[in-house]
Length: 167
Image (cartoon, rainbow, N blue to C red; front, side, top):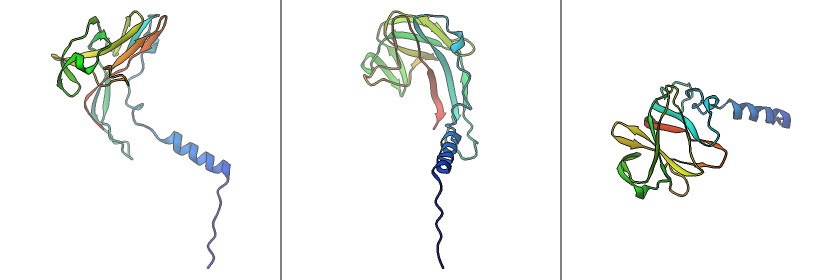
């Protein structure tokens, strides 16, 4: 008995790869509230969205994940660039106190949108959750949830509150 091997043509292989690559969904975009870029009115500073992640975001083959992302209103605390040795840790990504200079407090709207005019420089962002401050990320220099303002530019800082989400 002879075994016959068929060779797939290069264009067909490319097409299949294209379908596989673009057919895969990270799951995030189907859950995400719309971005609020259309609301930006500042010419220099930071704008962003505050989104609350809750539920199961584990990848599934049948799209049965129960995760939900909701735009939320929160007080956003803008501090000078802050490292971990400048906060009083509470647990995980929660902090009892931020010991760096407070620059401003702004509140996100019902769509989670916030914006603030700032001078050029680097800043850290925290949201108030009950009596604690929450921030879930650092940059390569150890600054907590940072954003850098460049002269005559509005920088986006997405704030994801993820302590009730599983991955």
